[in-house]
Amino acid sequence: MPPIGIHDLSVATTHYALDLRELAAHTGVDVDKYRLGLGQETMSVPAIDEDIVTMAATAARPIIDRHGADRIRTVLVATESGVDQAKAAGLYLHPLIGLPATARVVELKQACYSGAAGLQFAAALCAREPDQAVLVIATDIARYDLDTPAEPTQGAAAAAILVTADPAIAELEPVSGIFSADVTDFWRPNYRSTAVVDGKLSITAYLAAAASAFTDYRRRGGRGFDDFAAVCYHQPFTQMAYKAHRHLLEGRGRAPATAALDSVLAATTHYNRVIGNSYTASLYLALASLLDHTPDLTDRPIALLSYGSGAVAEFFSATPAPGYHQHLRTQAHHDALAQRKPLTYDHYRTLHRTQTPTDGAHHTLPEDTNAPFRLAAITSHKRIYKTRQPNELRSRLSHFSQTRGVRPGCDGSGGGFGGSACGGMR
Ligand code: COA
Image (cartoon, rainbow, N blue to C red; front, side, top):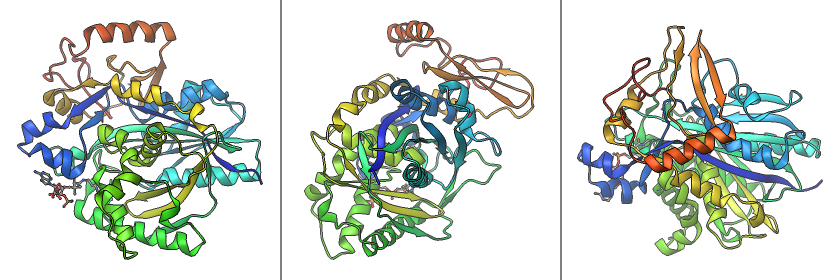
């Protein structure tokens, strides 16, 4: 059987970012709690006309542009902030990025974990039919109630991964360790737009699940920690990676120094530190960060630990392929971060408070994002997405760079639909 794994990896995030110093100035919390205690600096916040579909399309389109869509036989969208209870988000993506009619499309849900399930399903499909490619997209908006301890751990991003045989970026190794149990540490009932979380329980549940998944991985013949050049953890906040790695090592009688933790973790945290939690996408942002910020990892195994509250954890590994550097999207990832627009606290709260209309009437959404895809309207309960043409996108970005930081009418005083260009929705 040929090696199977990650042939391409592309990350996208939102139009806006909230600096946690701005949040701290209003909550009265010492900003060091956010920056040092949680390991977070800013968090991505979606514009009024962005959602998990627009982020997914923005992440996936460069992959289609590079490789075409003909070989894609399956599209798996992993998300816990889906836009519909019945229709898969991947079907909204279909016309936006030109997916073939001969690809099966399905949505996967299990809190922050389902992207790892997507990768494993994709690897199995490629093993059965090595000519096919599977597009796995992890896309989420992490959203908690305002004025709660979870508020600084919000964020949003999408990671699109093309899985194939003979992958250009990294081979997924077949051994994996799994742990599943019924735990109520984080959940979102159908009637809520924000998650409910028992924060302290979610941390202990994560640590326990990670340890059990690693034990299962070892029992099944997996590698020891010293074999890994780096370890990518699910990062609801980046200090969680440090907590988890320390926990796993201490469980094996080792007491790691901070420098030793940094050597396998620091490079995995750059994107999550400034994007915030992105639920399913977070682990793959850690992988992208590691690959984009490490000189050479060729043939050096990397561990990945996925955790999704509820709870499922999986410990698996990937080994970068010779020449993988030529296939990375480092500059595009840095551009996506640099192009985000800083939010004021008031504007952030306005975006947070605005809800998706539920009345079935026609709602045209104001143009807010500069992304190539936007949610343009909701009409008769249908979501209408639009693709921006390259010339429209260029002129918008050039206008944006001239007026960066100044958007008349967007001072946070507006909100809702119909009247203001500054409302927000999910
Ligand atoms: N300077 C530096 N560090 C500080 C600090 C300061 N002024 N004030 C607090 N801290 C540290 C704390 O000591 C703590 O570090 P520790 O975890 O190493 O003990 C850390 O900052 C967080 O402080 P804490 O009081 O524990 O935070 P909290 O109870 O307000 O909330 C979460 C933290 C993560 C529980 C909360 O943000 C949350 O519920 N998030 C969503 C759920 C989540 O992300 N779960 C993770 C697993 S999935």
